[in-house]
Image (cartoon, rainbow, N blue to C red):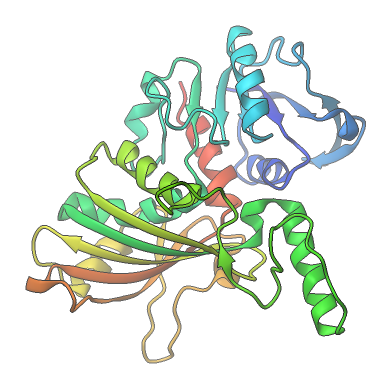
Length: 333
């Protein structure tokens, strides 16, 4: 089925990735409308050999549209997603606006595709860090239920958008030239530095990104009994997030079992060469659809052989955002 489609937030980092993925996957389009803010209206973006104009996002943008891929920020999604649904469209929303709404499915296609069927017009795309963790963790959980997850993230500038990526480049140049630099997009100097994720910190000391990883995983797995704690950090990497994941299983789990399961898991590529000391890296994950998984080893701090440690990398803009949303759209009927 070919959809009359609109991309909301078409000029942003995820919006332009939507275009690339729709083209690469030959997504069935009856038509394509590019929507963005008034200041971007009139710009042209290339798609399938054509130059498509960017239109201003308004209440009237969704007439005749059947599918909306949205990544224009939570406030705009809250305002315009209901308008699009009222006009007859299904919205796959990439913001946090609807993720924890109990009436809205929160979907990673490799994990819970069955949830798509119960949508009421809006389907939410999870947070990028949640997706990158869930793709390799879910197939393990299906074989041997996981009791506890401890995850530490190493998140690229891409997670804060195209402007943050540019700021990291400018900051690196300034540092290397011995010049001062004042960040405007990120709260701290991004070059040659590591800092706590730039989301608000709650009264419990957890930042919003960490809380998202916990609550979203509970919702996607339909299993709020899993104990989860996260530490989310920004690192001076342009694109692709990395995560160190420690898992405690119900029963003993060997590293060989984990390798076998992940080598057959959809959306996962095992990169685990101990002899060459070659494991997942954000440079290798950038531009890739698969989440790279490696450093697979027994966690001796968990008794009874029930602990496994691994390290994963995934492209935040692709699988962590645009690709996941397009995969959801491909499963719509």
